[in-house]
Image (cartoon, rainbow, N blue to C red; front, top):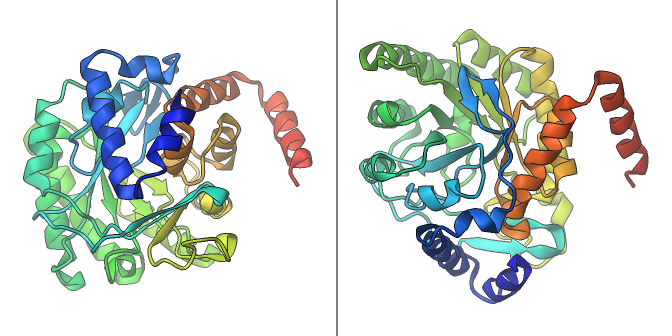
Length: 357
């Protein structure tokens, strides 16, 4: 059924199709039909960041920027849903067109530019939601805020979302806000994370509940850069890292229609780069929770993320191409992998590697 719906949706402009699909999902949710679209709801509870997740598969930020569709998306069997990226003030984002499909590569390019209705709107939508699962809220800075004042925007968002989030993600890796990725390195990163960690600890105390802080990083880093980021994350007491955001590389899609569009590339082409970053992070952060995202389009790909070092995974582009049943497919595969003895896991991994082209 989803294949037919997708064929119709893909005749529309990508951003228009995105809106139509979410509105249709809302209708299905109100009719109590959303859960049927995803098939089996997988019960595979796991504790990460001190939170209990019903299963290991989440929805990545970016699909529901304003938490307008939280109930319907939550009904699809995700173990957690991350909404945003949200900024202090509403902003329209970049001019259209700004979202492009590359179906031959199972990929998407976006240069949305943190289009959102502002943090106050998102908070009201989360408060109105009936979704009972784990909610992550992804925060960023407004386009008009200078990079040297970015911490002010993150603090504003953190203060407002803290009472309503189970965890908060600090997005410093979108390629669509000029200068944002500069915050991933050196003194910029230490100053930002140190300030947010201090504020988060104060808010935890004032609100009587602990809300973990995660940081979302880019795949476009050398091993040495990943090591520096990992040390900064550890030194500043950050609770988790999400790896990774979209890539600016076009090597894997060279020659395809839309390949030269500006923006971040997501989907299958970022899979290997994301896994490499996860592996490097795990080397430096052996116990820190890692949420793996980038190119998951099958249960096997979800398991590969786990084997790279991820504790949880998130879907985005694969969900667009594969539909709601990808959620249960990945959750079931991860549940089976977690139950498999270590020796058997190693044999399965070697078998997959041998079968790879």
